[in-house]
Image (tube, helix red, strand yellow):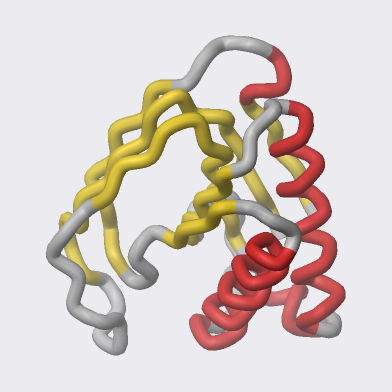
Length: 137
């Protein structure tokens, strides 16, 4: 799994193009302030591991990043462009749902961008060291 995490002062998205036939219809966008925005690519090799172990590793990384940025809001964004290998849609979506639930149980405000869409994005992010963290998990 590859993860690019950004602390964002502001983040907005609008659905631009549906790219997964099974995705629910989404027409409205959303906006967020003072959040951790996680661009996540779940890889084929992640499916060889226990789903719960992958979820725990992802959540621990996101919680650490949030603490370093004094932040309590996390946005999960499926971004299958951080590497060449991709996990199945089903595995990826399940991992996102489990990670979101674990974050909520830990007191975080969470959201997921629409799964199966290309999105128009607006990002305002500060320029300091821990505002952008890339990791292979």
